[in-house]
Amino acid sequence: MIGDDPLEGDEPRTDGGTDGADNVALDPWGSSSVSDYRKLFEEFGIEEFDEVLEAVPDPHYLMRRGVIFGHREYRPVAEAMAEGEPFAALSGFMPTGDPHIGHKLVFDEIIWHQQQGADAYALIADLEAHAARGMTWAEIDEHARSYLLSLLALGFDPEEGTLYRQSAEREVQDLAFELGAEANFSEFQAIYGFDGETDVSHMQSVVTQMADILYPQAADEPKPTVIPVGPDQDPHVRLARDLGERMRYFKVSEAYASFELTDDERDLVAEAYDAREEYADDPETPRCEAAATWLEAAVEDGPALESTVEKLANGGKEPLRPRTRFFDRRATDEAFEGLIDAVEGEKRVYDSHVDAFDLEVAEAEELARDLEVEYGGYGFLPPSSIYHRFMTGLTGGKMSSSIPASHISLLDDPEDGYDKVRSATTGGRETAEEQREKGGKADECPVYELYAYLLAGDDDEFTKEVYDECVGGERLCGDCKEQAAQLMREFLADHQENREEVEELLEGTDVVLESPRR
Ligand code: TRP
Ligand code: SF4
Image (cartoon, rainbow, N blue to C red; front, side, top):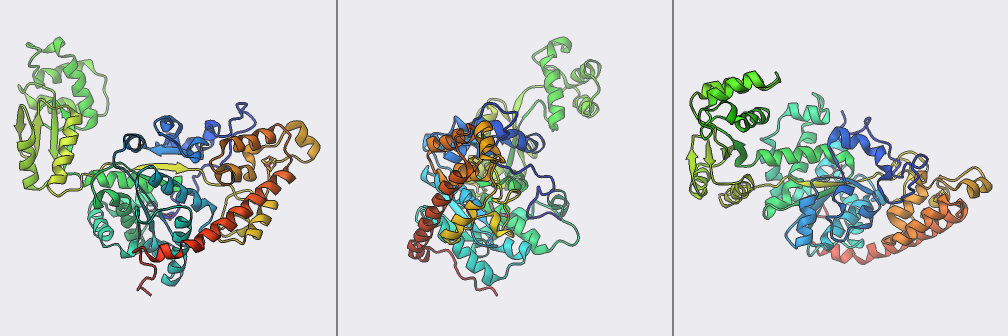
């Protein structure tokens, strides 16, 4: 069973750097590293972040440097940001250990979106930690507090944003229950590899995460919402997008006649409609049966052909005529009646759908959503996501909480942080001489990553300088690590001081710090 890390075993290299050798562009931030993550684009349909970058008004350095490498439908979020319209950002943390520099990426992403005007949410996934990782409630309380302190220390504004823990947020639990009615076990099996041995509570933690992801819209109104996470969370994002859609009252689609069509069938009928001059006695009213005959002769056999021809033949003399359809998926009777009244222009009403002849699909979508919200539905927009690269471990390989030397905890003693960086693996050459001659391999260097992901902060010049000096052979690993180690020591000392300063701020929020559960 996979559960916590849905892509495990099928994962891209997590080197976080760039290609190096075959890439002569030497672009420290660019897309040169994308080939490592290619599988995610090709097989999972994640889109490249580069493609949406220009739509972001003032992109975060993690975006500029390609650390945030992928997304699903981020454009509406970027547009809302640019236009000063409502949008939200939400992510969650499983309190299984100390917060580390990998979590900092996500903290920073939430905080940045909040600063750009998002309604920001951060949640403690305590149900998931308990169900999927077997953490006790006492452990969870301790870690939860620590995550929240780091989040606040890094700049999250709890007065503007929302903090909660899954177990204590009644509205999230209620929404989880509703969403659970739209999902079934086979689906969980297919997505997460769950089987007969899987705890029921673990499954409940999945529907809870679905509710988390949709919560910003449920608590307020439908709005673009971004979920910043690592790509391992993508299966959750996809399922949440599906479930959000299944909760919708109406499905808006294009149609050509009174009967329903699948997407493939609709494409064929559209083809037949476009060719109406060829077979219709009167091209104003091409008959279904004539379209069926034409289609059968003109189109090569494909999966949907037979069923389309049959549906058209059954349509007999009914004319094909393009229209926008509101299909009643799960609307209340009142909402359906309300829709009928609200559709302007020529319309035709059937048992479970309404066809509108003077309405574009986009207008119809808007009307359907407004109506749904007016009649008490959620009207969810599909949630969006952005994905960041995983950091390479300081010892090479994966950054893992079970290998302390491989990662830096935000609670590490600053001196230990210094030491860990000093003893990190690098992309350096065997000898100083070779390094001067050939340059270092910044793209394969965990220390360079530390600069790009964290230590250089917003300073692109500095990041580029480190990169160029390294690959140009002017920078040697000893000095480079010394500089990074000092910066890390400073960062940790500052961060820990800030954590102390936000203690009171945290106490002042209404997030439940001590669970009554034991
Ligand atoms: N499953 C996430 C993790 O393993 C935690 C999580 C719970 C989450 N709910 C969420 C992440 C909602 C993003 C959005 O860390
Ligand atoms: Fe890495 Fe710095 Fe060495 Fe380059 S010089 S390989 S960036 S440690």
